[in-house]
Length: 120
Image 1 (cartoon, rainbow, N blue to C red):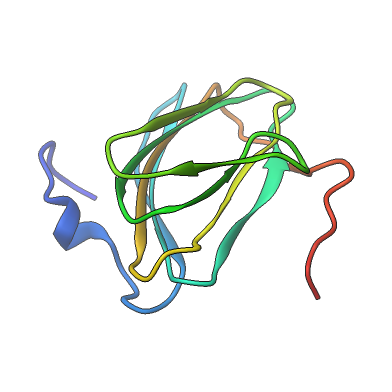
Image 2 (image 1 turned 90 degrees about the vertical axis):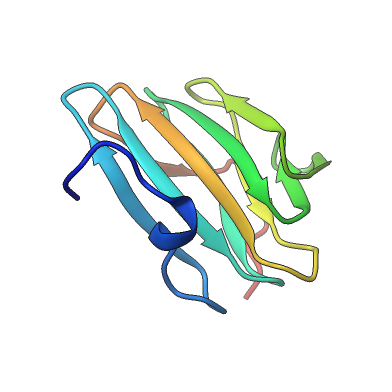
């Protein structure tokens, strides 16, 4: 991407499907913009060495605080996962969830959430 100021509504791709766009990357962090369709997931996972901060712009869902514990999130809320903390979201609502996320430091590493039973 070029430029420094963006319209989120123009950046989120894949209407009616779950997608992620890297909207900025520097030497120390990445910024992602996610669209999660109703009934879809960002499966619970951990980053062993990275912080992952999510700002919920649109939609309602179940944010994973651990492999077994969730909290309902809605627009205007921020969720913070420190290295090794489980996080993920299930879109339990009727509209797309739009999430702005910042990961740091780079490189980003990801592992499955311990004890989470992934649906088949």
